[in-house]
Amino acid sequence: MSEKTNSELNSEEVLDSAAENTEEIAAQEATDVIENADTENTDTAAEATDPENTGVDEVSDTENAEVAQESDAIVDTAENSALETTETNEEAIPEKKKSPLQVPVIIACCILVAALLGFLVYYAFFLKEPENVTWTNDVDNVTYYYEFKSDGTFTGYLGSIEMNGSFQKTKAEGNNTITVDKTFGSFYQNMPATYSVNGSKLFGNQEMTCTYSEDYEFTLKQGKREKKLLDLPQDFTADEDLVGTWIFKYMNYDIYKVTFNKDGSMLLEFIQDGIKYNGIYTIDGSTINFTYYVTDSTVVPIDYKVDGDTMTFMGYQFVREGSELEKATSDQQVLTPQAADTQAAEAVTEAATEAAESN
Image (cartoon, rainbow, N blue to C red):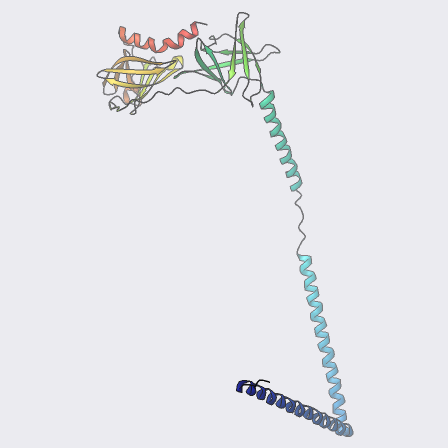
């Protein structure tokens, strides 16, 4: 057998010593308990033989019993109070119930959603009207766009030219008509055309067939307008005296309006005809080269001269919009246009009128 090391021997000695001490302490505690028990028994016997102690003990026992009963009663009261408080709190917290308005609101929402879906279906598949659709057709290789709005206004587009007017409808079984107040594209001015619409607005395949007579029928198709925007002139330097909006008036009526912007864009409006010409301009001395688009770019040279808040343009005297002269010239007379200026004004309208007259 191997010999134990000193540390192991010391550990064993400590353990043996601790065990012996534990046994001695346990024996001593047992002896103390027995002695205490004998002493208590002896005292109890002595007290039992003493009459005065007996009465005192009985009174003490009675008081103890009453105290115990009162303690039990207090405990019971506290427990009952706690239970009652718990029950009261439970009764005080109402159960969450659905509001009586929730059911009607849910029903109303369902009805609203159903009505909305029904309207969308009707609008997409069953509504056969010209309004709120962009229509298109080709006339002599020129593409025209037509928009009929719910407020009774009409807008037509030809290249960078825009025409504004109005339209009317009549509803009769098998004989619905539409009348435009301007001659534009395939429509004649103030002549009712019988129309019918087929296809689905949702799928974008609607067609509107219009008839003036047995010999003249045309079809418009639902489409998307392609805007004809001209590139702004490069290295453009604006005439600050020219920039702004100018108006030609006669007998309290606005006849023409022209706007020159700093970037080289230009808008010429024939107000009484409802025609707008969107284009660009460059300046060459006293000449404005106005460019607009139909099937190709068309350049029209127009002489101009600015003197304060007045401008001579197309042979007419314009005044600056918002100036005192605009307010003071409601009876302004027409200047006699020169031949070149008359040709320029006619050239601007020629593209739109020729296509209309060819129908």
